[in-house]
Image (tube, rainbow, N blue to C red; front, side, top):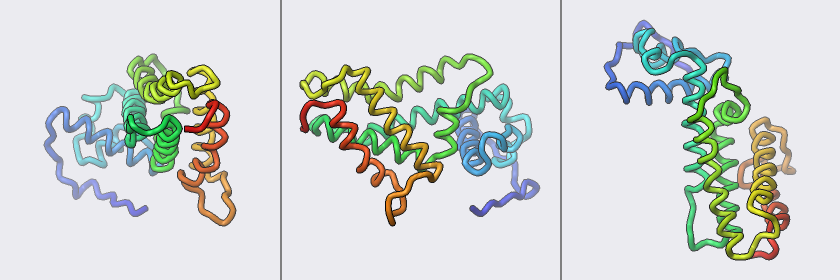
Length: 209
């Protein structure tokens, strides 16, 4: 990846309050994907944007606050991606497949953010992070609840959700850590899901839709 680092040549930009926070998060995510959480700092984010060193601190108390905001934003986007193809007229099996594909595609596109969301432990309670995580999986629960009402599940919603999430989540980490081999094919979200979906669905549902 080509990086252009020329802080002396960057003019200080003027941002509206809300716009600066969003721009800081966008810059922070780019730095996160480049260098991981260890290479991220509020000063680096401010430098990337060309704002004064103190500007990021008006929005984030410290690095932990920035990381928490990134994780919250990540869960919100994960939910959107899982439900991006949501179609109430599709079969329960197809809706589950689309949600699983969205999960894998998000992880593949944002590996360091994905690791942060599930592997980072904040130094203090962050209620909005728990809420964002719960909301991200509420969509999956909704799909499974619909499947249950249609008489498709052989497991409870909780059991089916745990089985499906465990399989896809584990595959997501294998995918982004480049631990998967699919013959001569380059591992990708669709290829991985094609291998997983049949086993997941047959394990939680009594019949195909």
